[in-house]
Length: 389
Image: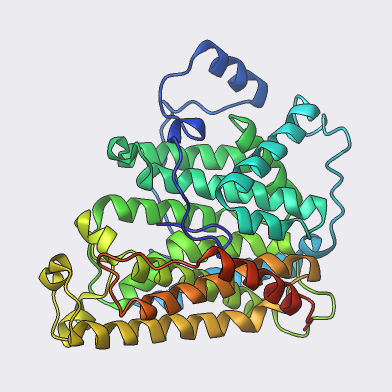
């Protein structure tokens, strides 16, 4: 249920073994481990400690805002995220054993992105080469993480597997990647002021998916949406960069990125009500369902009623409010980074329109944006991307 760069929040599935494997290594895997100074999955991992989950006495929004402030402070302290000149065509042997392999790793990330997030990939073509490759690396890590609990082999994933994945993440941030995709991310986080906390928080969202299938109120749901989608905005802003002429505070820009992730994930949830129900999951706030005179049984029956329509109107209104908040920050991004964000925002908003057009039947009808509307949205997004702060 996670998202990538807050504008790509749901992916088509592929064989998880092509991107992530917790199986025993073959001889070729052992060679890759030596080449990239890999991590052994047999090693232990310390107990998870999330800065967001630590204090339950405050609301989820207050706790998440603490993380936003931390990420914004990193960028303000280190302006590399807006003016760094990464030359990924040069020999990077000083960073990794084989510089050619690192360049291949970035290209592989681009291929994954092109295959499974075509619109987003197209938007990245306007970005500078260094930003584009770095964003691809983040995309692939997020995709691999999501596949752990939402992919074809998700039934075999255990909390221990997520612990090993988190340990592997720590090694990536410390310059010890295991495979080529890891190498691309490790190089990215060594060049940009990207913090590990949002990555850890996304893994925490995957843990929630393993053990939690109901959310009592929106405060609980907001935290989940932050974990699986809002985190990606915090990962990506340092790479995308902030416009030199932006007068907005760094905190406001991060808040907008967070809002887009929340909006996209809420949209995913509203689109996938029927699909999730068939898996025994209900991501809608239980207290709001009860207030509307609805229950899980109504969702499992999958019948559109006046009560359901009224309830869905309120849920869609809230998602649109988060989109409105997100809009405030897009223009503040570096000019070369705005197009894919605007494209995502416009396309995901139209999914809400499609739910309405389906008479709120998200039980048996899947809301989507047709190819023609997608094509029309791209030039509109490009036009908006030309508007600066």
